[in-house]
Image 1 (cartoon, one colour):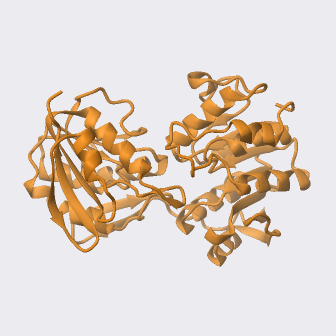
Image 2: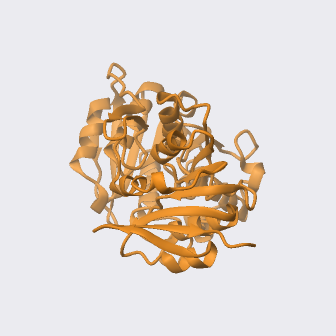
Length: 391
């Protein structure tokens, strides 16, 4: 890929199949700063692991300017994985990747792997887009210290407004040296080196017992709300007894799988699928099902907004949609999930949705699903029931 510059790559990057909008970009100043810092530090030619690449900027950029001996990448979101394949295919030269041709094991110049030994073994350089939570950073830092090469350099970058001293503290638990680099264009890189291989690794998933639900909840570091019960899910669960039994129900955007587990308990004859675009959420939901003796009742699937489901396949969907895309407030992700729910529900099937009161989701629910009524409101949330109209 030497023929491509960073400008060549950034120019063609798109976010699809994730939400696209004029105010949403497929790369940011942190991607550029991480790559330019790696060049300045002389990390070219090393075995490189990329973690947290959103749409391919770091992976394709590293291939272009660092000429890695081996290039491995871990992306938590399946939308990020698919965007990387699609963006690689758009480059004028270099990686010949399109759809399945860019999947792990193909001759693409990079390989996508789960977090763990295979991703990090022998890695001399790790490029990391700093995650939103300290728990996720700890899970990543511990894995790098444990599995990467002894001389590894971890370059962890983020937007200054989203960084905290807590991130330095987490890295210092697993590395001898953590050096903040000069900020540029409102981004900064933390350079960590000297892995503390004797440091006790954190135990993930974390499992906590929610007494109010009598439920054990498992959570990996990247999952929303951790092992706790978020207030939107709590409100939606108040309406669970009034939902009609389904042959097949889906917890869409399942997170730790609380809704799936509680639905399976309430309706023991229903087949339940928990699905999320996040690998960490899928692992967490699977562990939650196992911890509560529900593994034979709940199927857990990583997917992008029900993309692998046929039309009219399910009878009920429970949805607590995100109202953020990345670090920004944006309703696009929720609207995409509502549209997907309308396609996948059978006629007469029900979509139960909880959302922040300020979000105008009802017109979209009416348009994509069918008649919608507000079943409840509190100071923060609205719960609606939508019935899929006949096709």
